[in-house]
Length: 174
Image (cartoon, rainbow, N blue to C red; front, side, top):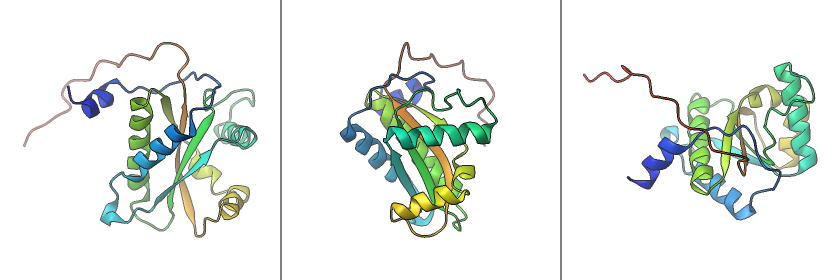
């Protein structure tokens, strides 16, 4: 079977990660795969903020819990040591679609490199907050950005989940 199609069938969301940080080279490969995702009109209006600093990662965890209404002891990133945040130009009509394609490519790339990943929401709410807008400015990112999602990445702890049976009657030929 074609390796890309095989990865698409085998990739699963990981909900338990080892604490070891993936190699920077692999994180760079994952990000590069995301940046090669299709984008409307070839605009490439999505960016990635790679969070590998534990202190900052823990801040993202805390605010994500607050937004989600969870107990502060819960880790919505399931212990993943790296968080790749996808953002897109806020005034771009296709921002969610373009950012979603970036996320999909990164999740597949992580799987292909022997890493686990999961898409976590609430990036939109985070980057509406002044402190996260300020974080982007500190990074040299100008303009208005909307958070699309977090790609939590790391080494899976335990067995990889099996795919659920695919529902029937989901394709209609015209």
